[in-house]
Every structure is written in C-alpha cells, then in structure tokens.
Length: 309
Image (cartoon, rainbow, N blue to C red; front, side, top):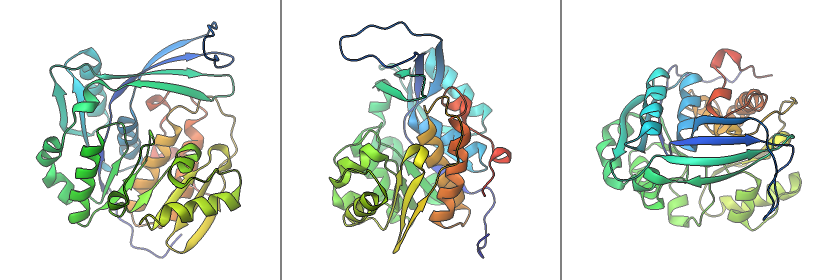
C-alpha cells in the first residue's frame, strides 16, 4: 500500500455513449459474405460511456453521467438502470428525433468479439449539453471520456475540465485522429493494441514495442499512457516510469465491455489518491472478473469482489 492520503467516494464525471447491445454467441466469427449459425442471443444495456459509468459507481465513486438517449424504450430502460446504480442522471438528455444507440456484437468460443455501433442519439450530444453540467464538472475529481460521441463535444469537455484543473482520462475508442492541441489537455490516455498502433504508428507485439509506442504517444503532449493488452495485461508509462503489469489468469468467457471495466476502474482508483501504476493493477483485477462473465454491464464487478495482489 502506498503512503498516500486516500479519498473515499470520489466524484467522477463520465461523458459518453449509451447503447443497447444485441449479442450473438457462435463457435467462430464469420468472414465477409458468410452466414453462420449462432447460439444464444442476448440483448443487454451497453455503450462505452454507460459501461464505464456503472463500473465507477459499483467500485465506489459518486458518478454523474452525461449522455443522450432517444425517446424510446431503450432510452427509458437505460435511465432506469442508471438510477438503480445510484448514478446521477440529471444530465442524461433525450433527443426527440433520433433513436437510442445500438451495438451489434458477435462473440466467438474464445470470448473474442466484433462490434458494429449505430450511434443514434449519441451523435447529438453537444457542447451546449456540456455547458449545462459545468457546475458538476467543476466539482469533479476526474472526467472520463471515450469517442462514441462527437469529437467536437469531447474536445469542448476536455478544454472545460482542463481549465478547471481536472484530470481528464481518455479512452480513445473507437480510434480517431486526435490533435496534439487536444491531447495536451488529457492527463492519461488508455488505448488498446489496435488504437495504440493507430495513434503511434507502431505495432505492439511485445514489451519493447509497447515501450516505443508509449513514448511516441507521449511525445504528442500526454504525460501518462496505458496500453491495454488483453490477457497479457497492460503497459504503463507514468511520467518517467515504464512498467508492464501482468493480467490475472482466468478462463475467458466474453471480453465484451472488459476494456470499459478497465477504464472505469483506473479512474476510480486514481481518483482515490493511488498512483497510475497501482490503479492499473486494480483495473487488471477488475477486468479479469468481467471476462469470466457474459455481457457488458451484467459482468461488471462490485468493489467487494476486486482483490489486488
């Protein structure tokens, strides 16, 4: 345990997407043009923003979620779920003209997945919506975002949080071109292997290439970089320290949402006063629990379940 003053019930703002996941499990994923027979069908609440918000709430944070849903059954169901998780939904707005977002997900027998998202109302979350929540952002310890909402809104929210002196955590998914001006306002970026290659131009195949990629991303103006590597763990650049943190070995059932659990867990532990490296170890433990369960939000662990070695 570090010699730090830890904070209970930290305040985290999650700005991001709300989707409904439609999941089919099959022995393998189809190739283009192929039809295969799948097994069980699941329809679960999801969205990277929502998954991360629920993770942060279950792991002990006071969470405010800023998002947008459609005026439909999926949106109404999502709102009930957030309220049941004790998430502040005052800034989950409703778009009367667009449907709530949906994600079509295929999962193979090894737990790997492929996902297509129809964004719907997520794409109308605007800077004006962020303005309505500025008092909450001013009170926050951390602002956590992804890229399933308009880039203009992400950049606007990051600038506001940065001006208020808040730590901005960015999960750059789905990966997009990011300006250095924007990245300089981000405290830590958490890309996976594919996103890392897109951001750095370096294919991550081992610890040495992860080191080079982390340095390349950091050169854009970000001091802290965490590259998630699935069952191999995560590579962390925290200021001048570089550390490979191994994952907990488990039997993987479904990786859907595991990255979101990781991001939410890092944000909670960091906001409590732990170092980024310690936060990644905690997040590895939380994500390891999630991949042993089917679904996204249904797989998210509670704080009492997560043990850090």
